[in-house]
Image (tube, rainbow, N blue to C red; front, side):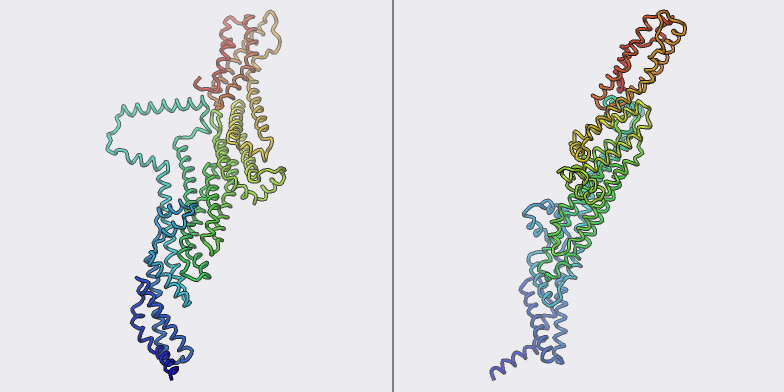
Length: 610
């Protein structure tokens, strides 16, 4: 009887449970405290237990339908309360908070930073975990609400951070700084008087002439004469390329910290088997945003490579940053697949390798003419700066180029135990410099013989000295062991070509036949013709070569010495013969220059200020 009464009481509780818990379930869960939420979850457990009893012993009972309705309503209210609690405790991170998290990226205390960066209060987090654990046990894991709430918040955080970086980049650009200075100028200033305008214009003209004289005398001018606006615009563009790449790398670091934050937030809210799909869904839009930014920056750098801009190397700094972040990103996305980030990194590497080839193609198709004074071409300066910038990313460039068949084949033909990454960079530098030499030779065809030799001499010496100063010559010698000797041979050849440009002038100093002791009329006429032709050729040559530019002081003096050795001996000999044997009533009309005057004028070559 006692066992029967006990069993009856147990069964009666199942029939009474819907009426006892109806008010509690209809009121919904109170998430303000863990105790009240636990009471609600216990009530749902009692309803679930009653469901199991009736489904097993009396499936046709009317009471089962009441319990089912109450249970389903309670679960829906719990899901709504979870979504409300999740929304209330989810806020996008501010850009400054993300900046702080990135600053501690390598710090061992980064875990505490990411937890403190969470917007969930401790009480709210406990309530969410309790509700999520019950829903997951009931087979209704809250994955969809988590994606619906957390994914937009993460994307908003990343978008705000991207906009913040862009605003900082624009504010730091030289162009914006100039505009700000102009905007701060007093708009109520009186108009400048006509006299002031005239004085300003005259001062500008004087400054321009002085700067041109300084450039030509010191050789500081590089490449064709460009306007200040063009040079400034190019400088701004290169600076923007570098800042864009740096900002994109910071965006990737921010994404890594966001992924780590979402990973910690999702732990305990869904069962572990569902965590990979949840994290992948939450971070999907963020990864797509980063991929679009990487694509945009890479495209911009490839355009810079096509015009041989120094900013093209910025894409390698982005690739290096993305590669350094890859292990952290894999841990942050775990247990989700890191394939999207790996694909993004491969895309960036593809753009990097293509930018190298487009830079070479840009050298080949460059149409900028050389400077009128034959100074170093801007393309040579750009190539040297570009190779120097690439050397900082040798550890990234080497493996990337090793995947290219042509570079792997070229490397296999070189023997020795060289650093493979340095060897790959050396092979690429050899390709750039070979194409540069061809382009410079093509550009030199615009000049007369003397200036052609000066132009090639200036550029070749500039490249050799630049490679030596930067240490790139040692790298280049891995792929071209005789490169230094080749450059020096080219320099000597161009020197010889320059000296041979005097042949026409020297022909006027050579006598067709020895002069007799007593001059005949035809001998006198020959001397007159020789000196007249020499004077005319000399004045034209001097006028032209005084404006030629030789930036290197040592080379400038060496060329002057070579000129004196080539011209002064034959001129002095003819000058002495002419003075010893009168050949005209007014010899000063023909013999205009003494050897000392010729030497003084040669000293003034390559120097407009002389």
